[in-house]
Length: 476
Image (tube, rainbow, N blue to C red):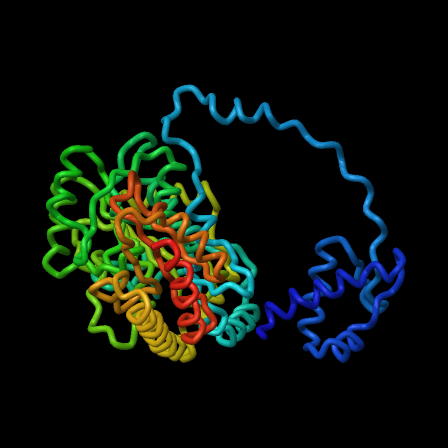
């Protein structure tokens, strides 16, 4: 049993035992709880902290833990019905304005311990470099000035590291440190596209980006993707028809298809955007999620762009931890000043301790070791998931498996109800992602996305496919 589930179970046990104590009465000591429940002192401390946060107990250092006094009666229900009018009657604003976070919230949902999680895009704790992160955080805390205010653009050393990591003609002065990739996408779209204007997006594409675009009042215009990435002919048509001045893409291990933009199409995309006087927002989210059997990766589009067409985004969150929300956005020319101004208004700057921790992490031998280990683990997980799909649901397996990223994109037979299948799968004990949220308009076919990043290991992935097969059969 992992520590996370142990904490939850112990907290539930202690919560159930509170009825034995009177308000203000002292609970058993931490040592007694460790011995009685055969868990670690850390697990006990975290379970107690959870009950403290719920207001059920009070912790008094040096004295112990006591049942909290009965909470006073809650306030009367609040009538917020007036807000329905206030939030929908905003005269003069674009009709697309609004934050539909359905796809984002679904991706962030935590599956219960008994459910095989093939939904989440974050690494399972066993794949995260937890020891390296802890050591980096400890070293960062000892750095002089670690809690001081950083430059708005980010620490110079971190900007330099990102510039080298992206490569090409970029310099540190063209790098802006951001609070992860999602924040960078928000800054990019709010900076480069006016409210009410169109923005070209891949179809299908990442729901979190669509949510950002719609919240900014933009009109996402889909451009279809095939096995070799976005189709340049349709991209040119979309620019001409819409007058858009930005195209958001994921050229490497695209989410959700896993496609890599082909060598022949890469210069075409830049040429078409340049001719349209438009930006290419390159979301390079999966570069550090390459598998051990992958060929050499193509350079970022930004590394081949001498004219400031590409605004490049990358983040360290995906290959490390959901809580290491540090990334970068790069741009050349006046666009950089616009990005800098918008981010400063939105969030001032990324907290310095987080930037210092990132510097300690990427500068240590543990970082390269982690990336090698992760590369092999993702390969093994992809192989396990695809192998069981090939055995039980071969018709769903894509012809070309991605050699990077963390998910497979499955096309269901026409007429299948992906929503019903997703619900049936959850009842069978496996969480999967329906494909509808990845399309800006009507979906051309039903799809599922299966992630292999957040499950416990290859054996658990195999079990997840077996549960999906049980759910799939009766609906066939």
